[in-house]
Image (cartoon, rainbow, N blue to C red):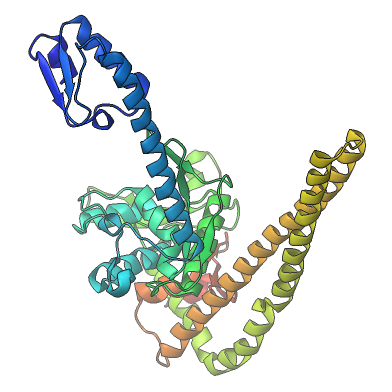
Length: 446
């Protein structure tokens, strides 16, 4: 509109009020002066001000300043109200762009089962080994709509769903905050304002144990730098026992009737002279059935022993006790830090002595905080191990006496990795930590 006015297409602009014309006093005056130079008048209806009037600019300056302060006051009141709701543990979800929930009774989140099925599918595919980008491609190919109603999924959207605590029924409030009430610019909260974590605030779509396992897997994959597209069931799961490389799929004799899909160490194509053999899908499937059936043969013994082992390996009681002690210590030390700062502000202190006290308390606080972070990592690891073992035992319990055909679901839910050695041995590492060796003669004969 301003561009059209300056181009001579408009000679009078009628505005409801100064507060609707621009965000602040400077913008208002700058724009009005540019228009006045071209002989264009702006009429502010509420304030009854005409900019071509001699008194117009003075009144505009006063009124726009008042309008700016009113905007500031409104913004501060809204912000206070939001933070009060956060402090009271009241959860707010942007339902229009949030998959899995809608606003239910008493404004509380309510699960939408059709959408919740998509969330559970995303978590299941990730635990099967698919990367966020591969999951995004799969959802796009299946024609499933994104949270925003679009047809193309992005890996960042999948990662956001995998790491959003709201899906396990909890809520971390005030992840972002507004830093400028005029521009409405916001930033990620890195400790500038308080955050509030509300546990069990609404119904969960993903079990907390499963959610924690996914967080552990996300962290491990990023540390290892090994994301897999999981185009095939065996993608990213077969490891060369000689160089540590990953087995990849290759097509042999692609243009002949003898076309064959084989798996071999990827490092061979990069100049590595590994002596580990190539494998067909039938070889891997046969070895897996042998390894899994060996476990089935000792199923009752394994299940009985594992309930005791699982408790011993995954118990977090000692960590929970230490965490409580460290939390108390942090509160005490923070109180000491505040007292040192207040004393320094209220009375004359030797600054060298002040720095010494402050540094001593701060170092003690930081040491406790770092130990708490380490404890959280250990708790996550133990809980993840517990969940993986429980999933494995559930799968083991549900199987018959003998598995005769390869089942992708069974493969995904029980196998962590397979290491292949140059003599043809395959060592299967199962999700419960158990390892089974299958010799070449066995899988060749199967």
